[in-house]
Image (cartoon, rainbow, N blue to C red; front, side, top):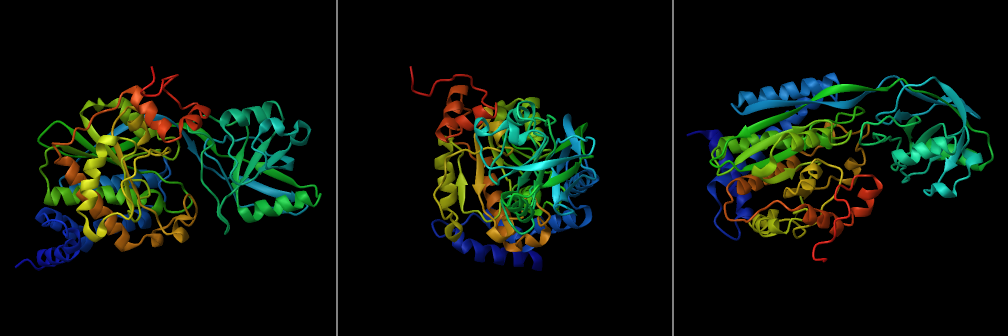
Length: 473
């Protein structure tokens, strides 16, 4: 007898005793869950990626070598892969420095925002900016100075251009929102445009310290030297395919890149690993499905969704039934239909069969911005995400030095992978749900219902013109 198979099946039966409280368990589901829990190849892969290659900042050796390793692992399983290459506005980090030179002398813990360009070093006084309304700021107070910007205030590219041209601001230091010496990796904008001034993230502790000095009437001065710079580069998306009977397609995606301070385990190493193990589980236990399943590791998500934006422009999406995005998926407590009403019955049925793993919250139906599902939704493609939080003491290290492998709970990753594989198998064999792509008008209404129209318009990211709400004459 195959002892390993017996152990997997025994564990699957134990786990799926809870998953089958409403109906007899599907033996393939049993095998998938047991394999995911016992073998947990997602955890092994993530361990190897983070240990051997570190962070995966787009354009770096860590990104390239990690993707090469992942593709080799897929090919070893006889899973078909391909690369899709495109050019993007990239950026390289170098030896940047922000130093406090008066009334104290020390280098600050500061990191440049993506797309900040190199410049001659300069020294300037500091002014505290705590007002989001530019028209209420005093030009004389900002002229020739570096702005220390309060947590939670984020100026757009256009607003920074105005602060430079109309107010004479020379630099910006954004105080982080989480204490403990943390910084926050971000880009200046999501279009690859060089900002008109150097922008840096600084810690809460040093930022508030400088703020108190200013409030005490002290003359605070800093020296800024930026050597990082924008550069055109090529990126690869990695695509793996499990062919189905029909020409209809299910896309499971996750972004591959990370910031460069930690190891990118939380954001988004878990997604990379979950996609890999879902592909392995389906190939092992449900290799032939009604619909083709395509696994896509998108690059350069952190810089502006460049990988997923390229994918939706490169491909005819007519055959795509649904897109599922895994971005920082920790412990799933809810599934989200993202505003596509036709998905709700299918997702309710999926959730109901999970027994004690059934989600804590009923199916959500509200889209959100900032990840690789967004370009698909803009094209009207039905999309799904999980509400799957990490523990607060771990997720606080998002985009920081502390985003590292030891934050990942082994059991949490196995459960999220198993739930993902069960969902993809259901979607890949669903022939009764009347899924459809939304029209431009319906898609605009989807964003309106989520309360996102104003935010998208302000960012210059509303592509629907003056589209009227659905139901209006």
